Length: 591
Ligand SMILES: [Zn+2]
Image 1 (cartoon, rainbow, N blue to C red):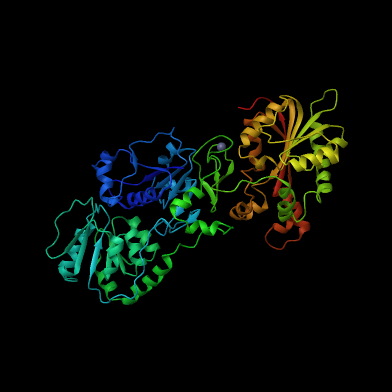
Image 2: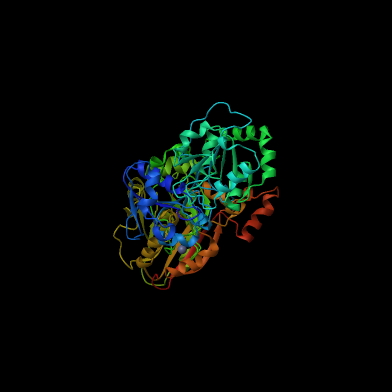
């Protein structure tokens, strides 16, 4: 598997993202490369010079100076900080996994992982995981008042927080020089430190933290490591954004760029503040509660180390819009193995699945899985579905082109043939196509109707050979809905009819809670259609929508306690059914 790592680096971005990407690359079983564009222009150092101080003597991974969109990367890991949405454009259509992203790109990332360092904002991630952090072991007990103090402000400290804070700590006599140790990172500009202060150059921080009573640092990995190690932390920040993240995490803080000494004195005098902090640190050493509902296998994802987690998230298809190909698109809802994205161009709501298992349409699909969803098997439902088919034919038949002979109809995904049975009653030359060999055989042998077995996108079928093509609850199952609709267009004669039914993305269930609706949406429903958007979408494929029927009215799914006698007409009037049927006529070629 080929992994491209894209760390944030450059002035003000510290060394944490680089370190984290180096650690992932080191443990990766496959090809991994770091993308460092315009390295010298951005930070005044070549890539090797930048990475070597962080690699601890380990060999460096491959480093790319620019991005080649033609390279077949299986996954892109974006360890950004506050990435602009425009930075995602070069990776359009690629499965990009964002790590702790706090910028405008966050909404547009196909998949998001937050560690406890993440922005903890209003847009929850697909997965909360601590596995990208290697946290130190927790020590027992701590010393108060504080005697041994460590200052560590990252690899770069472009705001010179170390120098400013040291000056104030010594100037006010809060601590003596001999109590203070400062970490000089590999990219520090400052090289001179006050007399008597211990200076550590590029230490292995994680292993020495437990030797101190108090750590001054900014919001970031060191703060988290110190807290996990059971060492009290006071945070001091280069930006308001860092301070906001620190406050969200409940870290005591003393300001942005200018230390607030009044607050520092009050903090140092209040032992209870640090007791609370360390208690919550014990909890944060694990992951933040996941924003996702647990499904089998999803709990384990949170605990997998990156080298196992990332391959488990490999998407089966593209993350671009399956109708118009646009990417990137914003996410509407995120789950551990799925993101629902809304196309900015054609507005289609679609599923991007990550490491989901492909659904197979064998016997178990029509029996066990159907029963789980609808409470009975497909064959037990046969008569009811045939009856629905009769009603659908009343809408379809008047649209058929007038010509001699029996109109020829293809029912794609005909299952055990209830619609075909109804179509035969009306004198249509009806035939089926079904992926399940078991169901196709049933249609041929039990119903005596023609039925081919196979994938609609691959089975040979006569071009311009049909007067009608129907897909009842089938269109949403195509990963590539555009390819399916283009094929329907080619198979139909001019004036031929496309008819389909599908769940509604604007019915009462979706309106009450889109997130809940999507969390219950089957893993093999790749496109979520709405009645309002169907006409414009079908036009792209050479169809004119002639008739729309909103179905699946469920008064019991409405909130409140109004009588069903009122709710059913209201549901019909407002088009709030959970499914709908569309009837369209071929007026041209697909664009
Ligand atoms: Zn689109």
